[in-house]
Length: 191
Image 1 (tube, rainbow, N blue to C red):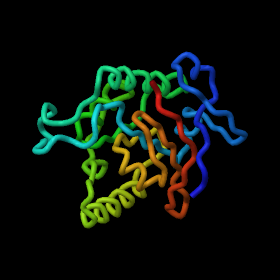
Image 2: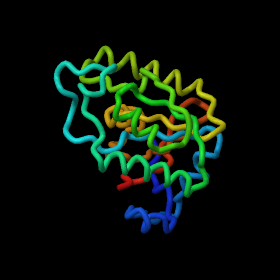
Image 3: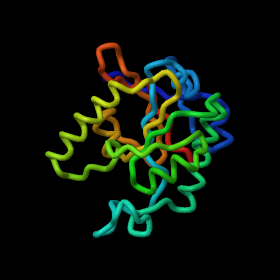
């Protein structure tokens, strides 16, 4: 696993109130995601609390932990960040949880396709192992020639990218020729 670098050093950070950390190897969101073989793992925007209430249902957003007003604004700013970096449209896949779908839609970068492989898998080790194997196989088959976003949860990102992700954090990955996934950079949480 390579170490991550910040994704952008543009003055956009000052506009959005996002600190961009300088690095000799820094790449911006636009150039990284417009390069074949790259994709972004994004943790949904801010949703108060931890875990979902007992008895929640995927088909009923009122039973889930949802985006706060600040999270909704954060999601729109995430889309603004992509557009400021030259990406006005992307292929977007999302977890079926409402907070992920809402974040993806509020970014306004294109149609959102639900993918159960991006769902939160909880603490069930058997489910986790199977879902992650299936997710890695799916990523290996993805056509990564246009900007591609995978909207998901912290636990999924931590397992795939081997780094934790804050609410709204963008983690850029590259699929290597041998199928290995390497961390290319991280954009701190957009507020």
